[in-house]
Amino acid sequence: MPHDARLAFALAVVAVAGVLKGSIGFGAPLIAVPLLAALFGARAAVVLLSLPLLAANAAVLLGRPVDHAAIRRFVPLLATLVPLTALGGVLLARVDLAALTVVVGVVTLAFAALSAAGVRPDVPPRAERALSALVGAGAGLLNGATSIPGPIFALYLAGLRLDKRAFVYGITVLLAVGNVVQVATYWQQGLYAGNRLLGSAALVPAILLGQALGLRLQDRLDPVRFRRAVLVAVAVAGANLLARGLGLL
Image (cartoon, rainbow, N blue to C red; front, side, top):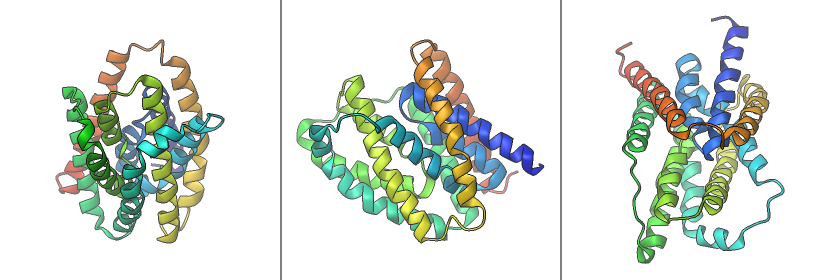
């Protein structure tokens, strides 16, 4: 595919992913990583999406008052999220490309299946601190290695029975902290070498535009049909990645 066509495709994918993030608060990597990976490879796709994700989450938090109670509540989660995101970034730099492709494909399909099944766990108050640490560890590894921690956060926060405002604020803070560590680790590991830094920066306006559109459309879209369409796209992209990683395509 010519360079201009590849750039246009990447911009369109990231913009659509931004619409998804703006409408439900998370999920941009679910659609962007597998679709970009089909064209650029799994490692490049994860790296290219890192700066747009950081910008999108920063834009949501910009100008909002800090919720100190929420931050304190998420301390056990953040305590494991930060170091495990760094470890995931190190793994991304070293893991075999075919293995990484399989991992991204499996993670994508698993999240699509969980979302389709409507899984919503219940988090007992007595177990919250321990579960928070476990969630932070698992999400951190996925964040650093695949950029796809959002559904884990969403399932966990849904289990805490947060209201819509608290949910959106909480998941955005967690994603933003993970993004900062992710970008710093990728930089330290040399993953922005070549044109990847410029390529990632070039995608920032697209995700911000898509996110702004998603925020405007969130009350007008048919949420059931929209999420079904997204799940189908995610499942197809994940299956394609899995097949590629296993050498079936």
